[in-house]
Amino acid sequence: MLHRLLIATLAALLPALAAAATVADIRLPPGFRIAVWADDVPDARVLRLGRDGTVFVSTRSGGRLYALRDADGDGRAERRWTLAEGLAMPNGIALKDGDLYVADVDRILRLRDIERHLDAPPPPEVLRADLPGERHHGWRFADFGPDGRLYVAVGAPCNICERPGYAEIRALDPGGGAMETVARGVRNTVGFTWRPGTRELWFTDNGRDWLGDDAPPDELDILTTPGAHFGYPYCHGGRILDPEFGSGRRCADYTAPAVALDAHVAPLGIVFYAGSQFPAEYRGRVFVAEHGSWNRSSKIGYRVMMADVRDGRPYDYRPFAQGWLGADGKVWGRPAYLLELPDGSLLLSDDQGGRIYRISYRP
Image 1 (cartoon, one colour):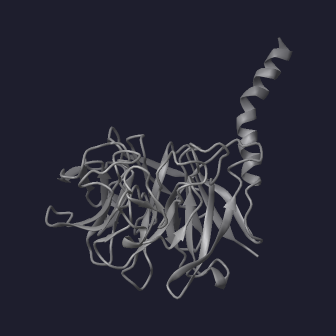
Image 2 (spheres, one colour):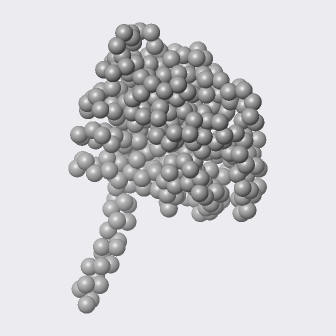
Image 3 (spheres, one colour):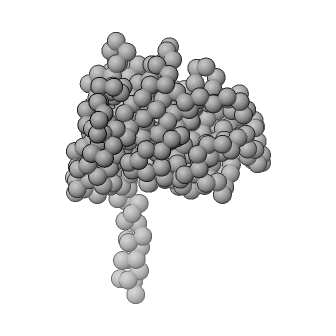
């Protein structure tokens, strides 16, 4: 009986021990450290920072919104609130003037003055319900631009197809006013931001499937001219005509990616580092979370990448944090989104593990 009890106890402890050992195995440049900032946050996705230090967390398919806070400054969140439940796919969240906006497939919702009502959050109010309703690639990403408009991604409702009103990035008046398509031919962007000091929209884009292990590339794109077309479904990665939709087309007629990434790495969150905790050479670098492949014979991605920015273009795209994909091909975490904290550290969500990590620097 004692022997069986010991075996059962060890079996229960093994997952936790394995996770702890794997966290220690994440590889970062010298001087950088990674630790769990919050766990038990199922399906954690987009991270946003409130004015009072609250971190808001969306979910891709869990239907919930969370708020977390590290009130004592020890590098780990000890408070958690559930702000909403039963939503459809509340991946995209954004903050403006204290209100939390949620892109929930075809709807834009708002929770007013949310940071003052964490213990009794208000019910989400519907601001508009006129976005496309297809749930395939329906994980909207949203953020407020320098012009005050709410930008929302509308992914293609398929692997490869030609459907009006999809594969776009739109800018809209969150109060129900005008809506403009600012980028076309964007298969499935689930992460974008603006280069500091400019109105350049930098975004990641997930390429189509079933053209092989190494094609087409995923993309890091830059929008400088509103209305630009980035190729989908006719041309992929600036150089590969689609076998079904590319006939009679030229890749030269579309905006090529700033960086053609490895195929199937599934880039999501993107952020420019503006803090001072990291060494000086990191200031202004762009970081990208690669969620990782699902349909490749050997897995790829599952890491955080970075690139210098020279003359307004990304340069030397390379790994920053990796190790969620083991040498044996087993995956224990999928990086999703990044958030810079006021102290200059970075938070990183992992929707597979239901965790949020904090990456800090201490020489």
